[in-house]
Length: 116
Image (tube, rainbow, N blue to C red; front, side, top):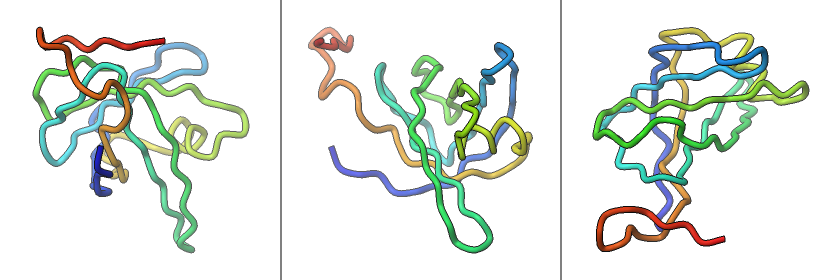
């Protein structure tokens, strides 16, 4: 699968799920064609040019819209998860790349099958 380019995404909603997890709804520049088992990579860039990126599984069902949801657990030493939980707010812009990973191709009936 070819690598996708970095693109802007806007945080349109943040919802607490547990004491250590929040769901972030992101609006992409175009509709997402993700499949079950895929993820997006989120990249943060500091003013000095330092970058940190992490992969997060997609928590929303494919619906053909430009919105996706990522549920992210805040890890004590997590650079990206700590920033998202402690600093990010609705209206902020993030860099994203995806969808990536997951099943190579859907089955003939359109469903995805994962092998373990």
